[in-house]
Length: 357
Image 1 (cartoon, rainbow, N blue to C red):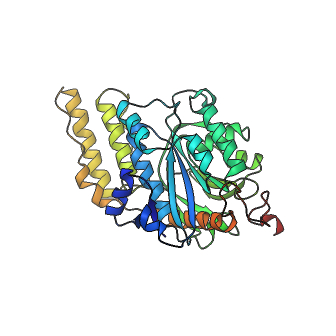
Image 2: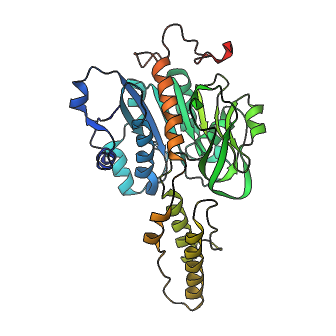
Image 3: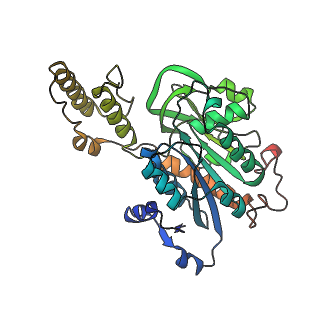
């Protein structure tokens, strides 16, 4: 079913040009199809703000539930932004007060830029708590991505993330470990997920919090888990929303930081992401960069145009399937009245009926 372009947000036009099913609000109102309203709390830094919109909007729009999707982006005013991004937010984003007034069927919470040694010291800490607490009581299901997962595990479940001592960075094989759960119904039992993080919440910590682990990797750890009831909060520790080129963009940024003297070491390659031939190209580029810096010569540009076409996306189809399952269960369990999260007969403490198994 389509995404509804309910505003002039540029992301709608970009997705439409990419071939996504996007309709105008006027066209949507002529259809006798139920609406689903999904909030997107976008806490990403300025440079990633629009890309993150596209990634999550795309996953929602590709869901097959019989509904028209209205996606409502908002952010936290406590996050510092540049003038251009602040103007963008002011023009296209809604406020949390507006979100609360109209209600939501589902909520997605993105990651954020971290600058403090403890998440509780971050400017987003208290306002994020307020959003999550409100959503738990008023929204059928909330999906947390990466940093948001770490924050919720800390303030709601008392489980602090732990620094890995390195950056977990690349594409990793995962397995479904709870095949009965509806979120992984008809999903490949083994699939890839990108990760990009310095910190980790272990399986033991998820279990200590009485959460349900659904998908994990021997190398990258837990990716997908849920709250004890199986649905109210869904946790991603990886980044299934990533575009094919997302890790390449991150790598390019890290190389640029090195050449500018803002990081001491040349960045390692993301694991399991580049083909062998591409690794050779990038290794050759590394040697050229190091030689140029030694001789105080101009640093060559990353040969990005030769790399993008060689990248494979081995995770999007499964990410789409999981989000499709999530949206489908939201559709089945939520009330038509968005301010009443569950339909009559649905136990909010067991919305999927998992405790009856």
